[in-house]
Length: 444
Image 1 (cartoon, rainbow, N blue to C red):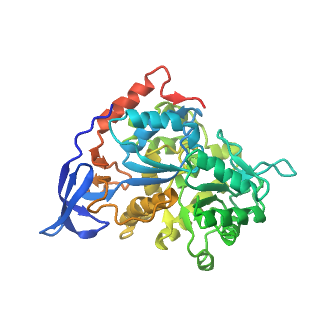
Image 2: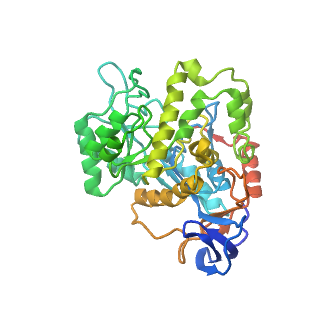
């Protein structure tokens, strides 16, 4: 089991950018709770360690196979992958009931607290249409609910609630990513869509909607949705569009799309950061090294998906500027790996803006503070105070701030509920799963 060092610890002379980026503090942890946050004299020096809240993955699928051979990692491995990368809160966007039993077994047996998790149960989508197209989500190896009439919404909410769901996930995309692209999926009618928004709002149940295009987002917004599972990918939103979408929030999810357009050299470069070979199935490296061309070329969508990714990033950065971005990966989609890809998402968003003043801190704040607020909202809990404050659970990451360190660098230390995560022990646990009879995989 992962070794727990202690639930009592002191961090001396650390910066806490979410409180005050200019000064330094001493932080004391007692019995897993922050007992003291005290400013200390002296200006902040170059290289001062920074304490940030734990990362939050705002769009994941624990029951979908991220591996290139379509195998599914045991959820107990997935929990360790998140902890290794400093991810302390996870939002599962559909399918979690399929792996819940093993997740809970692992939580009960683990010597270190698991990541906090909130889920929607199974997603809701449309019926098959008159030309044979199914709603988005049917193609995945996880159940989905189909909405045919307004009354189905209540049945879906009841069924998901019985499985521990805290919010509703609605699929509303025809699968187009660029203007003129072929329609792939059926979509819910506006009447059912509006009823789903009204019903969840009346019951105080958060609702997240999965859209690709500007048209879909504007229509869903008009029906009452405000939480969008992806950034828009077919048009760069205008100032008028943003004004019309007042109060809407968007999850970035560049990592879920990018593997479709990557060449072998891109894969090998992306998966060369610290944390990949230690936590992910190494067979993925062998698999991508043998690719001769991107999936996008093979499937005839390389150009459209390349443009879609650029548009998504542009819209995500505009959302960041407007204070309405959430950082998430769509992990569980092929090539988007739990824990590892969330840190990579930060680099994808930063991209050539590495020199932009404050952009790195703004992204890290979004992936921590704003992600935590979103997590609490989906969990049905009122918004709390700052996550690093006296009386709050001691759940945070410590980073070294050396010049040239990538935004995606692993935290030096991860603490969750006062327990310091031992990365070496996590590596050994994952290796034990990989060398077992199951090879660390499950079949649903």
